[in-house]
Structures are given as C-alpha cells and as structure tokens.
Length: 208
Image: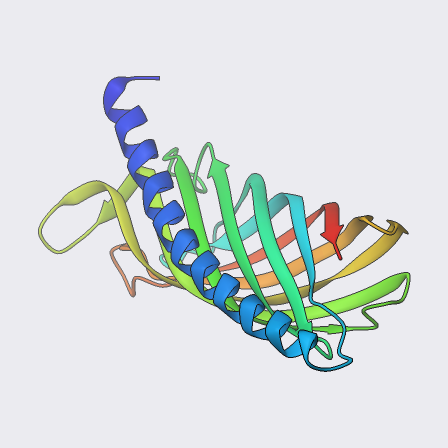
C-alpha cells in the first residue's frame, strides 16, 4: 500500500473512531443512569451486546442506472436499557473494486449512533429495530465537486434498519440477519446523495 493511500485510510478510520468515541461516551452516561436507577428499584440491569458482522452492501449510482456491490464488516455495540429501549453504536467499513463500469474503486467507513428497540429480549429469538446517524468517510475513489476532483470526502449519514438475533448460550448469539437502508451525502457530481441496501450476518457476545 502506498504512503498516500495509507494516510487517507488512517485519516478515515481516525474520523470514524472520533465519532464512535463520542457515541461511546454518551452510551456510558446512559448506562450509568440506568444502573443507578436499577440499584434503587427492581428493574433489571442493562444488557450490553457486541456484534461482529460481515456486510454486503448494494448501492445505486445517482448518475446512471448501474448498481454495484461492496463488502466488508462492522462492529456494533448495543445496550438494552429499559423495557426493550436502548442505544446502539456502529462502525462499518466496506470496499468495492469498481463502481459500476467506471472502474473506479470506493472505500467507505461509517460511524453512527442512535436509539434501538428490541422485542423479546429474553427469548431465544429476538428482533430489533434502530435509527442511527453519524459520519461517512469515503476514500480511495473519485468525488467530483464544483471546483475539482478529490480522492476522499466526508459528510453526514443516516442508517435505518434492524435484524434478528438467535441465542445459542447465555452470552453468545448468532446475528442471523442485519438489514438496513443507508443514506450518504458524498460528492458525486449530481445531487450528492447515495442510497444503499445493507445486508449482513455475524456473531454477538452479550454481557449481562
């Protein structure tokens, strides 16, 4: 890997980590309040889960009818705080060797945070839905702007979706399905909007 490419990749990961750190701080504050309430009432303590997921993402180019797949992985930290209500923080990285027929690659790192709701928390099969917002960092590609072409860009992103977890043991589960809609706003020479369908599956470690 060349030095400029390594530097751009590192900058994108650092930006995502910065957003994730802020989200983690907010999560910790929420959990502290929840645990304090638990100490003075019969409510159960929050359940924290750490999911590692393989991601396959289908994107549609705004300037044509061509679509392309990118693949990668995500790390998601979630907490069920009170009666199914909770929070989640997700960091995902994907890469495509070629965007449609353009032969231009694309690497994307997103860091998002927001509310989550889980149904049947204590059952073997549980379902969750979440709405996350944060930052998207694209690099190792071409992002046309009014003035010039740049190889990296960042902007806000929105991720809405959910999934299904299947418990294997008390502290281990399979994320049988992770599905969502991802909206990014990186420069593309037209409306600067990208919509993607994100699918994945993986493993979940739970801390009670």
